[in-house]
Amino acid sequence: MSNTFALAYLVSAALFILGLKGLTSPATARRGNYMAMTGMVIAIIATLFSPAIASYGLIVVGLAIGAGVGLFIAKKIEMTAMPQLVAALHSFVGLAAVLVAIGTFLNHRAEGTLNTGLMAELFVGTFIGAITFTGSVIAFGKLQGLIGSAPIKLPKHQLINIGLAAAMLFFGFLFFMKGSFPAMLIMTLIALALGLMLIIPIGGADMPVVISMLNSYSGWAAAATGFTLQNNLLIIVGALVGFSGAILSTIMCRAMNRSLFNVIFGGFGSADDAEASPMAAAADKGVKSAAAEDAVFMMENANKVVFVPGYGMAVAQAQHALKEVVELLQEKGVTVKFAIHPVAGRMPGHMNVLLAEADIPYDIVVEMEEINPEFPTTDVVVVIGANDVVNPAAKNDASSPIYGMPILEVDKAGYVFVVKRSMRPGYSGVENELFYKDNCSLIFGDAKEVCEQMAAALRES
Image (tube, rainbow, N blue to C red; front, side):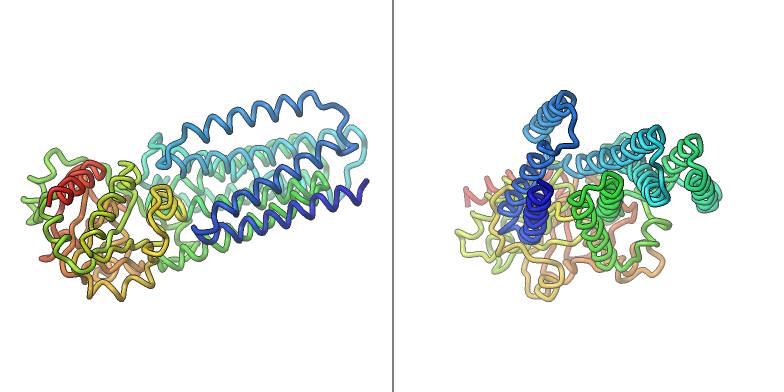
């Protein structure tokens, strides 16, 4: 029987690995999801037949509730809310790791089977899980707008974090050495506070990296739980998630020309002041504004047009209207491409997912490194809801918080139209130098409405 379980878990692990491989490309992402889902079904069925299960009552209830909630969320969730959903799911993994550690400790203490190896596993699983839980809750709050996206820093913030970390390790040591349940609870509470303190000072502009980092934390929490439960599949899956999240965080930090340490301890945030009259504010600052019809006139007379999607497109759900604009331009013989920045949106791959949802062909979606050399030969660029990822201050202003971050160099194109609701800065709170360029005009309005206006004007032309 043990060989059968091992084989089932091995097949599941292989399917998870193939699923991750499939998710590396939009063209194979659907297949990758199916493989991972199949792996999970096999893992669940195998676990249900485990001789260690004494009763199926609570398990069936848990599966039914979880499946119902998952089905409801899958049908109701908007793509714009996907980042905060991911953060919420990370928090569940962290909380589960803490609860499993506490339950395992109490069971083994009652049986008198505590040992050094198990205590170490419980210690690691508890503090990683607790930090993941509260950190993910704070990330969810920032993404959902329940907490301001700007950094929140207390006086001597880093000293407080160091003190919390030292106290957590101290009580963790007491727990490890003496098997003290009160020490375990105190360690858990301190770790919960540390998770809050680590994420609360990180600004909204760094949220894609934070989501990726919390994904890594959740993987390590799952792996620790696997050791505690002596479940090889949990260990494998946790390690896969932990390493992939860490690698992705490193890649994204490299794309921003920042270190992970700088993101965690030196994040920048956003300004929340609203503009009462966008066009008036633009005029006061010497920024040119334009109408959707102006952009259409230039686009249909261009040879090449590049669209740059951002979070504003996601919020407005403008991707479907934008697809119609693309198709109408292509019918007129215009070459159309999409430029994707690695950290556009609120989570890794956010823009790619939205464009795929609208069935925009993969072959016209181009990453930053490939598209930047093309901007000098591009006639028109239309930036839809993006801000920081096209800000020339990252190249020109050494005093800017985003200085050194690689950007989409749209300012080198013939002309740039930026679709925005107002003159407010981006999520980083940094004013965009692009708006003041001679070859740039702003089109104020909701991204979806502007795209619909563009499509209507193209149909009539």
